Amino acid sequence: MQALLTETGLQALFDLMRRRVLFAFDLDGTLAPIVDHPADARVPDAIAERLRQLVMLAPVAVVTGRSVDDARSRLGFRPHYLVGNHGAEGLWPLADSDGLERLRARWLDGGAGLSDAGIVLEDKHFSLALHYRQSPDPQQALEAIRAWLHPLPPDLSTLGGKAVVNVVQRAAPDKADAVFHLLGLSACERLLFAGDDVNDESVFERARPDWLTVRIGSPAAASRAMYCLEQPAALEPVLDQVIRHLNSCG
Image (tube, rainbow, N blue to C red; front, top):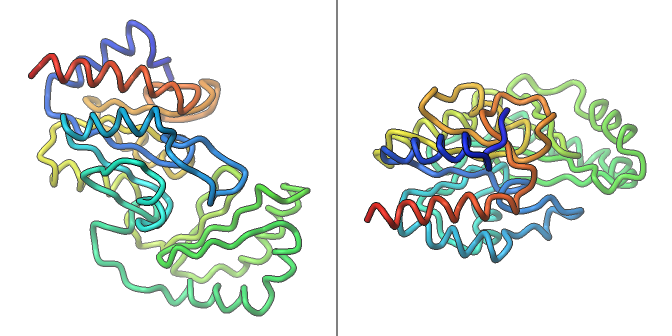
């Protein structure tokens, strides 16, 4: 990965905008900083204000692991497209999962021990998230989650993350499926996508050469993204450049 806020990176950004661009973003860890309690996450005012300007100039999407309803209340702006549950919610009909129902019942029967270990179950209807950021022993909590999930129902798979294990439907669309679909809906030729976590790698891995993909976080991290920014706040000067350029193009 190369740093985006360099002469080379900014030139790639300007080259991208020679054609109609869909600007797509993950939420937690990308637009909003990671916080100790997921319920406290919000897009900072400085980012939200810039995105309120951007939606007047170009198509904007948020593609998040949260449910659509949960994400909407945290944005502070109205994107043209809001896709939840790691790409599965908001674009296509998705059937309920027998496997998720089995895990919900399993939690009711034996989830108290996990709760006592600082593990929190978040039910997003089309997926589940087991958060362990508050656990006093994160490694032990992760091992407990893996043991609790075994055996995993055959229609489900797991995605790692930052102090979270996500349980998703195996046949569900992912974020890459979502952004390819959104390109068609928005009649855009190119994509800028920014994300920070494991579930964003599907976009980075399947990105076309004429896209621009950005990972938020350490440049030393293993990722297929083209460029990196070290923290969500670094999106502010990038958005300033985008807004200034689009305004100058009329």
